[in-house]
Length: 302
Image 1: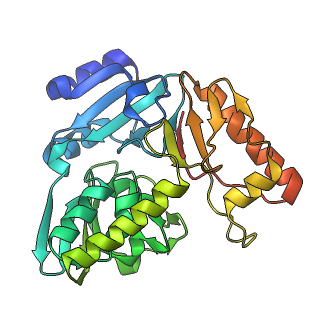
Image 2 (image 1 turned 120 degrees about the horizontal axis):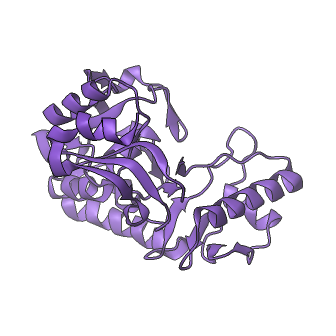
């Protein structure tokens, strides 16, 4: 749809809709160009309204914390939706069940669970993302995944229908599930196990220390670049990269982390093309050296 038609169609949403909006500062890599439309969803009613107006005639991308996203420098010919603080609520439904909006950060859910003496959420303190993104990719670390604590999700499809799906009806696998790609997650319920807060905090600190020892922090990275190829080998992806790739290889300011070679880093002004060249270089070298095809874990918006 042309910009002028979209401006007329979406006029009622005011400042929540922006055109030709820059996305560079909305992801951890600090890489990316503009999107044709950027929409900050104020509440569920408004989100339903805008989806019905769009009538599935535009490409839609839901941007969470931007912690696992690489954005093209070219214009995204579609609509990027960011959920506002009204999707950032978190509450205790019962003594062992938490309900959290999809914009809640994983770490915030982990902290909330600890304060309410619920264990099982500690691993979330080490995942830099939001609930919505975590569910979409069944994120996890240290042997735990979202599926292990999830009870159900509430979501909306691209034409504005709100649905609830129990976790038992979702087929979760390593870093993926069988849910339709067009679903926008609104909230989710999670189940924990009663425990003592000091015991939970101790476990969280152990996991955080392990992460800080082995993974880069406080730099322009976007988490794990590739999934572990569990169907092809027992080796971790970082082992395959270490054995196949010169780790000092870089393209522009896109380089491989010295601390963990499955983490790629923007040293300053890396472009989307720089980062894609590095990703393709590593993929090609691992395939030639091991015969194993790597699958990207980061999401690419282009």
